[in-house]
Image 1: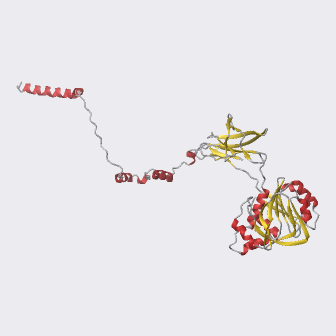
Image 2: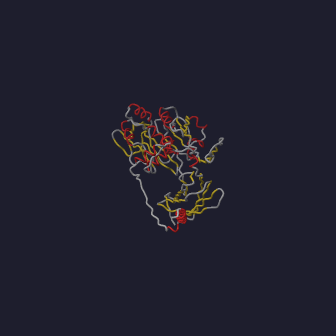
Image 3: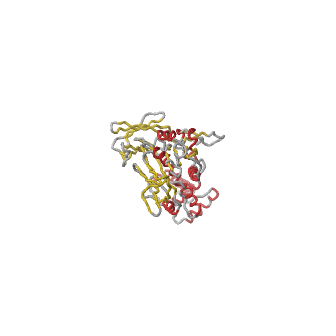
Length: 427
């Protein structure tokens, strides 16, 4: 969003050239709604809600499973299904809506979970529960987790935390997954995931196979030396699952939206193949057009797996650009805009910057004197050993005949002498 700010001028104002400034503000609708579905109240719910709402960009709506008929899935970015579907309420209609919506979700299993309903909701993770039994699972740090960053020292402290309560049964996973925590059963470290992530046809899914993370929160509070982990772990899980992937195969962008006249306008472009790998075998051209003016045509330079263009310095004004390329008989275009501000640095500060002047004098071996210290300049010059008196001699020769006035004086003196001698009878 472009904004032009104008300030009214004052009486006897020295300059009004600095009374106008144009800026761009990127408006991000970052407040996303998170749906939290649960069969009943639970300490885990409070832990989840508190951790999520620490980020002001998220708003949590808690809905019990017997009130799901009032939920509009289109208003939510992510669903947290806490032990849902549960064993007491038939929620098949809502489950079907979830499947059709392709909304990302985070499923948390527990003692109240309806495992058959869980297996119907998605096809990636299946659990064959044995006689409704519950087992204790301790958290174990998984290796090579890269979806988001967590303090490695903080996550290691989970080994001393209470176990989660998880439905007992055989776990089978269909597809690739990335785990941040694995299961430790008794004293046995396993490679079975406890807290992990998957993707099914572009739909992100998170799984936590146990209830009781509120106990982990209490463990954190017990020790002053404990590093904050649970809030960060929950918050970053939400951020990852709710983030919308940009699947455009051709992207063009500037490093910022507002430039000054003396700055170089830099554009970057990225082209992806069907496997979403960056490539730069195709040529990319761009047209940059000022608001009132002719088009400028440029070709991007190839740099590694991306494209780059230095359009140089441009005059003040609004600019729009349209970039295009062709790959695999498919033409791609990308558009954008930016603004160039007039360079009025000298008008933005109308009073002398004495600190700058002092710095300049120091850097160049000089000294700065304020008006009330001007008399000290003479003393400084006298004490400066680098300043020495220098004398110059210049000789020039001219013929006496060139001095007519001197000849006239000589003739006048001779005439006076002759007259005096004549009068005294000496001649």
